Length: 477
Image 1 (cartoon, rainbow, N blue to C red):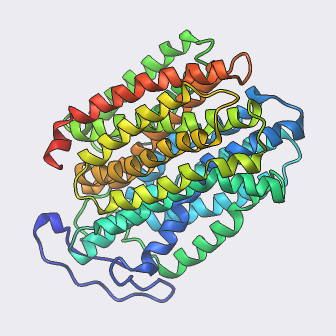
Image 2 (image 1 turned 45 degrees about the horizontal axis):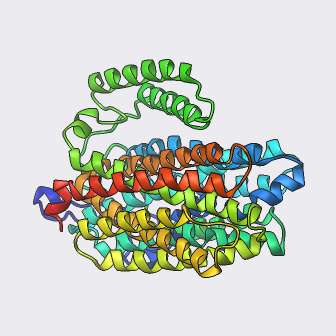
């Protein structure tokens, strides 16, 4: 078990108690044994958000359904992830990150088996729902594990460690389309569900061996932090409000305006309760006084809205309008994958935040502009360039915004703060899926792609302005 003073308090490190039988030994700092299971667990959620992009057409053909139905496989995972990330982050802060991390992996294994053996489309929906919940535990729990290790050692988490965590998420998301295309071509679409089982089993075994046991419930690493409340009412209100918002965003082509009324009521009730309860699920006062953190969430959500438009809208156009196979589409997305991986490494080596985020916003603008001019006879090189223009921002945005959350969020709430960052990302993704459905309402076509691109250009310019005018980023340039 890990005990030690919070380095931010200026106190000296406390002596760790002896490890009891059955507990894993404390990790030697931020070494490979500690980080390996965290990285394996954290890659599952982003991998599953993108891997399915090249399997949607095959799934539709298998069950005799269209794009409007298969889109629910995307939306249900985003809905589950958007709700579960901050909830499980709060649980990690409260009950202990190791417990939450392990429980999430068990759910992933079960959901992978359900999806691989699914007899019907409804079962696939259930599998994706469970997959969204299970994979949502890893990232906020990993951030909380690193926080506890930082307290135990009496020094901050090294940025390269955070960079590796970001690299695992970005890398898996980046290679998802290519891996999905390969699996569909070799073993069929069921392979994209089955592949979760061995990865989760490996992460589970490594975590049982190498991730230190959680501190006693109600105490942080130093043993002097009061017990945190789970705030079930706040969690329920947040879940209900976000679910209503997601259902509104899912159908912007035919907006259900009446949903805004219950959303407003639920949000007002949530804010009022969070301001009154002594241990809120979401610290409204902290967020209201933490402009840099709020702007980080806004940048992250907007950036990933643009990235996911390409991840799904562009790949769908490549398959249905240009006629490429899932395997070939995955290969065409490789430049996006490679540039995302390279730029995530470069972003980790950059001390400032403003430069990488500004470059990412500008590249998103250029990439969206290229999409606006694509057609059935566009040269292959231009298609590859378009993907690369969106891959680089994926690497830069993920790494830089993760560092911003680590810098601006209170240490005792880092799990919940990291979960809210992912919530912002998935709200952007859900909005992207609705924008794609709106653009392709009359079928996947050049005109639909150009409409999506035009909206993306406007949003990319807005992201550029938000980045350049953020004073907190100037201070960290």
